Image (cartoon, rainbow, N blue to C red; front, side, top):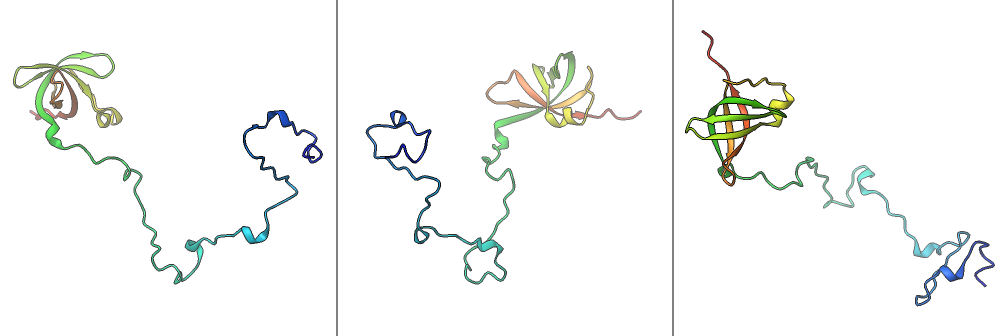
Length: 142
């Protein structure tokens, strides 16, 4: 019966406990069951859809809001040692020695940080041994 519709039909591959819904490609659904929706955004003077408003969203609007600034401490310090991969030993003004890594904007703008430079560091409240170097303080010209 169905094997006459398609020569490659293999009934042993069909699930046995479900009803068979097979529509050959030559048959289509009746015209009364199909509906073509028009795009209301392309209709000029769209008065049939007054509630439809197109709003532009920024790509970052789906992200969670930025964390509060109170979750990081900002300190100043001086670079004591340069380590590989943009890591530095930083001696903070309160005499703590932390491991600092450079931020993305410093990396992107190719800002050179050398031992002896003064920097601003954001230190997390949860791990006070590491911090992000966010700004290199310029030395005053003599």
